[in-house]
Image (cartoon, rainbow, N blue to C red; front, side):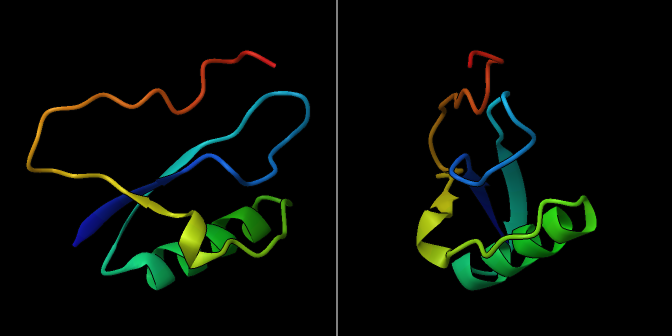
Length: 69
């Protein structure tokens, strides 16, 4: 399994949105994110190219959303 992040989808205005998804590949991650967004009233298509894989082999920190809008 791989870890992906995405902060390019539209969430509840005006606060920025971000998500983390664990999936086999970018296509599955995008489909899973699209599905959960639809279940939460935010229906939209998330593209696989918008999913950013997290490199688990090196230390890093990612600020997904800080509430700034």
